[in-house]
Amino acid sequence: MEALLSNYLPILIFLGLAVIIAAVMAALPVVLAPSRPDAEKLSAYECGFDSFGDARSKFDVRFYLVSILFVIFDLEVAFLFPWAASLGTIGVYGFWSMMAFLGLLTVGFIYEWKKGALDWE
Image 1 (cartoon, rainbow, N blue to C red):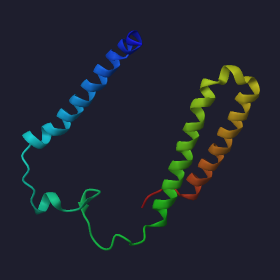
Image 2: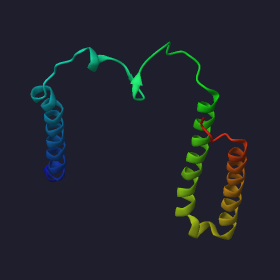
Image 3: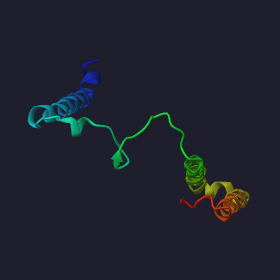
């Protein structure tokens, strides 16, 4: 039993050092950094300009459209990674099914582009 526990000793030492280093790194800025908050530092900051109006005001619909398009094309990339990793095992059928998927997304992208959804005025 003692031999088994001695195998875990390096792991316990590593975890202990990690906790100590993390605590020191978290406490260091509190001890060393000057803390002089003023009204400018404590003010709300949004996108490079001062905040104005109510936070519950409606956004322009183009903002939602661009965000949905981002999610769609982000998911496209998320599907490409596992497909590329397993391309050798899925064969020709997997290749052409992904080409059909990418073709459909490309048609959707061209449609959105022609409709002017990507133009921000």
